[in-house]
Image (cartoon, rainbow, N blue to C red):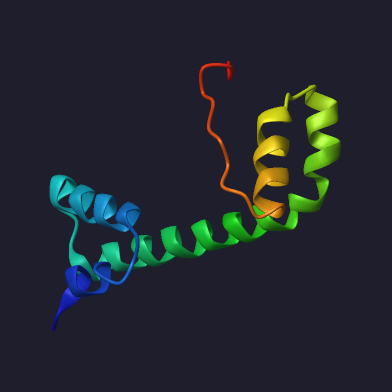
Length: 92
């Protein structure tokens, strides 16, 4: 039986951190596997929810009075097909 460590290689680095916690807390692999699966499922649902919110980004930026001028400049330069000029000195 390959166990959790074989399954962990297929997942992200966050799962590697979970496996390290398994060793620290001395949790058996058969029990910790469920925690690892739930962590991955919850992460996937959270990312899908964030992608679902992307169309509301403009309204959120207005509500929080976020300065998106740097991102807008980079977007327009990329859409025009020219390499973006990163002037990080003027970005605060």
